Length: 161
Image (cartoon, rainbow, N blue to C red; front, side, top):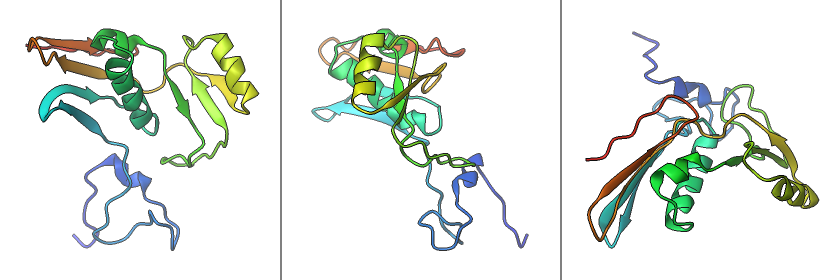
């Protein structure tokens, strides 16, 4: 009873270093990457997005939102599109890697794009997947029709009704 209990594996995101902004302290919540989105247009919900993936999660979510709202993809196209993630921020998880200038890309990112990124000073590495298991559900604001996309990067299902 004196030790309390941990309710989430995200507690590992605390830093055990005095004075660190994310240091462990009574009543404090850890920095977390657990985010989901409800996108509204004129106050009406039109899209939900969720994706696991640690520090890649928020980056993947932003790419999913842009894929639908800016690039005009449907939810399935949005989740299947290749992704990238920066490793320039200190990783939230132990051992808290810090890789300045490191950009991870999926296989679908064209070599021409990778070469241009290298010319800009990025260290580009191909990895298996950035933000796995994404789900996007969209409601057409004009027709009310729901559509959904399930990420092929891991067993994922999407239903809309």
